Length: 527
Image (tube, rainbow, N blue to C red):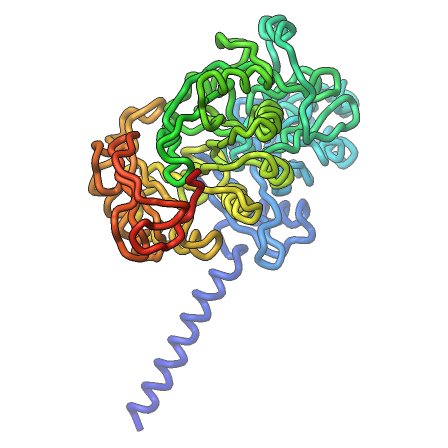
């Protein structure tokens, strides 16, 4: 009987403890948010029912509606402590939505004249709807509190600076670039073309719809990519017909292993990129501005002539990021199709689906650089987002365009075996088991020169995992020429189909798209 009673007591205590743990986990309000701040959060986010506190480089708060993230909040004194009013710092809680648009402000503490902020609703409501791109200037965009110009300016400056900092550091939104007078004069000399996929907004602003950043630009501003500029309410592209690199490469260099192996690709690139990979091997052009590089003026028909002269079977859009010279690429691809020349795209896949689907009508193959299989790596190392890239991969497959994927393996950052296993499963489920996957070794480049090269054993191990998960064509790259992971094997009989050493083809046993030995159809374009 005693044992039964003790068991019942233990069960009750365990239940209470478990319930307590569960309660804390499912009620973010039960964090260490000071009551004064919690009250302000509830006023700024009246439709939210729970909040949590997070601290990285600075403290900020998350607002949830039915456990779904609805917005963020932060204190200006945490992000812009140097900005002071007449009497000292003004502590303001700023609430924003998921796109960094201000939902509301709440002044928590100040040393200004008490009457100034006694009824601040009319003043603070002017900030609602402002974004990091908007100007917040007292006397121009914001009406000052009567008799309190210095205090009003301090509030506007603190809100603006802290909003920008939060957007850049937490939401990973990049700051728009204003064109300098020197660049403006150089830009005037560059032939330009009106961009596709953008929306005109009031006050001569434009919103680019080409990639997931969807930059909203005022006249004179350029997008994150560096090549799309708002010129008097019209979005123009500076990269049209302005390649900075023109070269003839083996198709294997891209790498494409299942698309016309052993042929050459007439390869071009322009300046610019919509990402900021810290390991970029072509950063001299991807992170440059068109006006800062020596480039050629070659219109689309000129590229076709040069490709024919070089006897290239394909034209490759490569080296930097073809998405940012979309219009140039598209017009070349249209002409190439008429001339019987195939076109291939080497891209990070950070593009909106509407322009991607349109492009897929005219190009023959796309290789996507899948940088990692987690969002944090994309945010911290790539300065982008993973989800749009995964959507692009699925879309390319749906559109019937030849697809290959490269995964650059950076030691300790994106080489987790379980993550690779998840990625292999995702690929198999979403695009099938035949899409070629290349694990490429990292070499110290650009902003990551302090990282070691990837061990050969690492890419070998990851290749093995992908094969275990059922992927049929898995390769390794940046390895000593002749490595077995460079060659193609029949997924059915296991015999060697294409023997490679570096970029050279030593043996090809694929006949009319099938294994010479057992007749199995091999994924790819071979003639």
